[in-house]
Length: 147
Image (cartoon, rainbow, N blue to C red; front, side):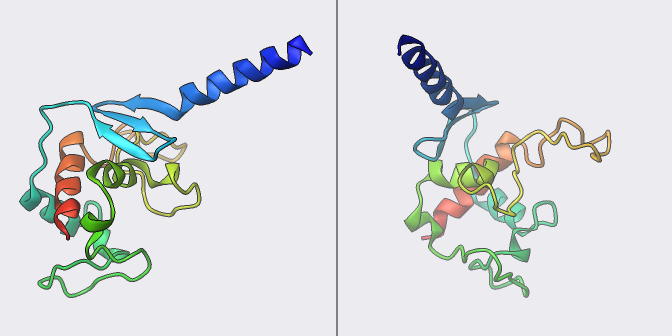
C-alpha cells in the first residue's frame, strides 16, 4: 500500500511540474490556461499587431473574421475575432497565440511560439518559432483591443 501512495505522489508531482512550464519570455500555466509575460521589456503595439494579423506570415484572416474592412477576404472556419478582447484576457489570448494545442490538442491553429522541430522541417526553420516574442505581444495587444 505504501508503494502505491509513493507512486501516486511521484506521478502527481510530475503532473504539476509539467503543467506549469516556461518558454522563453513567457510562463505557461496549463492548469488555468494562461500564458503570462515574464519579460517586462516586451510591450505590445496595436498597430504592429494588426499588421502581423493581416500579413501572409501568419495568415490569420484565412481562418478568422475580424473587424478589418480594408481586407476583402475573411475566413469563417475559425471563430470570429470580433470582440475577442471582451471575452478573453491578454494572458488567455497569449496562450492561444503561443500554442492553442495546449487548450485543444486537435486544434488546427498553428503554434506560433513553439520551436519547429519536425522531420520534414527545412534546416533554415529548424528550432525556430513562427513569431518572435515581440510579435506575439504585438498580436496579443491588437487582439485584446478588439472589444
